[in-house]
Picture 1 (tube, rainbow, N blue to C red):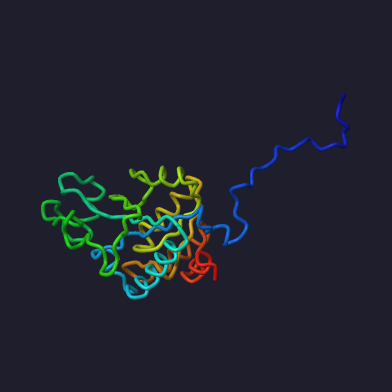
Picture 2 (picture 1 turned 180 degrees about the vertical axis):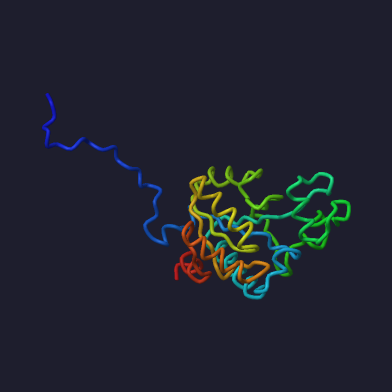
Length: 221
């Protein structure tokens, strides 16, 4: 029997199960991880807004632990200079203002003061610490695996630097199907203008929120 010419063809139902319809659903503890990006002395320790960053990051950690949210720390280290790729060597040459790789000084080496956690910050035994050398936590780490086996679909990002690792990780997560929330006042950059520029850009790619908004949802306030 032929369908009536006035009958619209049946459409395949869209799957909206993973689509959060409110901020509360977006950051629900069971589906969310808190990512603390490079809270290390030689990195976050350079933030112009360090005092506010530390206060807000600490509030997020406390709320996440209370709500059972997975807490993930990125730990940045570099290998010896002779094991670095050309891209990173050129980046370091610009950073150190030298013209020859032979004149470079090693940076962010394991065991150095630079890579130590900020004063007052230390991962707890139940937190997940991932060592990385690139500005995306999804690159060459088991981060994606840990999220998927726990059914986590949203990452809340805080730390340093907004325009580097936080930006890269948020957008990389988008490409892999994750929702990203940027805790704006718990982030910082080497230059405040860079932080503000990245936040403005990320508003189109992620949810930008305050620490208070996230903490309120996790604490049921």
